[in-house]
Length: 231
Image 1 (cartoon, one colour):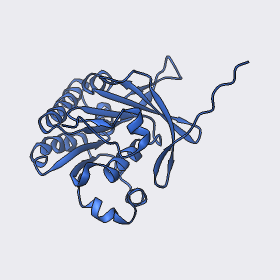
Image 2 (cartoon, helix red, strand yellow):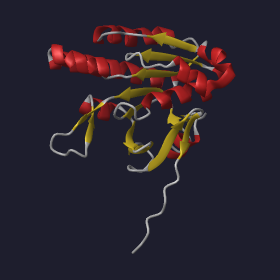
Image 3 (spheres, rainbow, N blue to C red):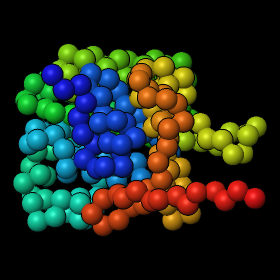
Image 4 (tube, rainbow, N blue to C red):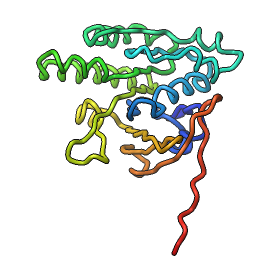
C-alpha cells in the first residue's frame, strides 16, 4: 500500500521524497502570497487519480482562473470532483469539520482546509482564548482521525505572524497546537520573485531540507541556485 500521495509537482515531490503522507495532517504555512493556495490547487489538479477531494475554503481564496491555468482544458472534469465547504466564521468552520466524517465516505482521496487559522485568529480577538483554542484542538483531532481511518492526506494551510523579539522569524498562527498535531510542517518564504519551501517537521525527512521555486502559469518550477563562490 502506498504511504504517500504525489503532490502533483516535481518540486514538492522532491522535497517530501514522494509527496504528502497519508494518514496524517500536513500544514503548509507562510505569509500572504507565498504560494500556499497554489500548492493546494496544483495537488488537486495533478494528483489523486480521479478521486474526489473536499475543499474547506475559509478565506474565499480558491481562484477559478488559477485552477483553469493549472488544469488546462480538462478543468471542468477536475472541478467536478471537488466538494466545497465555505464557512464564514469560526463556528461555521467547526460545523464544517464535523460534517466531514459523513462526506469522506464518498470516495474521497484528500481533505484540504485553506486556511485552518484565519477564522480562528479573528475569533481569538473577540472571544475567550481558552474556549477558542479548545475548539481548534477538537477540529484538528477530527481531521487527524479522518486521515487515519481513511488513510488519506489532510492538507491545511496557516497564516503566520511576526516574532517581536526576532524580526527575521515568523511564527505559525495556532502555535503549539498546530505544531504538535501536524506530522509534517512546511514553511514557505518569499525570496524576491521566488519562493522557498522548507521542511520544519517530518517523521522521516531532515529538518531544514529546502527547495527554491517560482510560480508559473502551469504550476511551480524549481529555481536552480548558483553555488556560492569561495574567496
